[in-house]
Image 1 (cartoon, one colour):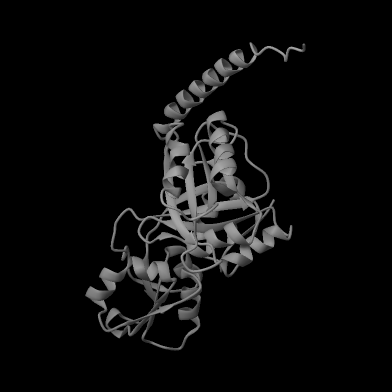
Image 2: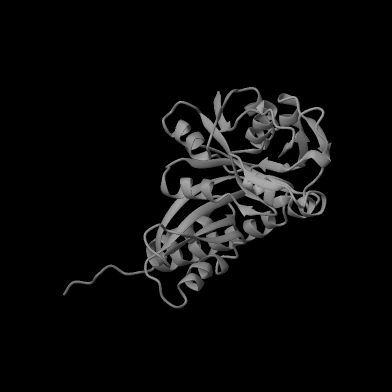
Length: 311
């Protein structure tokens, strides 16, 4: 198996990949930026690709959502939840009082606003392609006033010294990553389905009508986010994650009705949920059982329809 990931070496994405035994055993190659990872898998050069999709503090990684929604036919194969610990790192011999510029991935800088304001109020923040890329830049620079916010793996790879650890503003920070590829994984009983719903027309209550398709079937939504469709100002689509697998009758029925009545739906995948088992499993099973019972009842009624009588 060959896997692409958002690099360079030492990113949190590589850490997430290494937390999965099958992916850790695969041949892996880093790509930057995120769309290049997805494009490499799309071309068939790799079996799968691992990219960040959401952080519990800063929210969704927009470039990942947009690439999957508008520029790719790949599907999500699984999600990987990774605890994130950020460190302020610099070349050996550089102290905290020397720092005038801090470089890192924009999401990482945003997660450390409080620390930087308190400890380095005069320091400039500068964006890099990734936390690992920031570490690499600092390691190659001759400047003695430059530091990176990165993980311990990147600091080790690029020979940096950790000046301060756990500098994120919120403890127990987590980032979610996804493996993208082709096909739909078999259901596990603890799955999630992701879609993008494009409204047929913008009118009062249109979002409510979309949400009612899930509510009527007791399907729990775990994410709802609007994003521009890139077709014009004020034109939005909705990214929706719900509990369950497309093989579940109740989920399939919801998607069928969405496509038929509400607008175009792009399917992003049904895949195993990352993290601990949730109580929603029992609720989805009950909803699926109720749907099958209702479907069987309707079929008994339809079986009683007489054929057209001729004169």
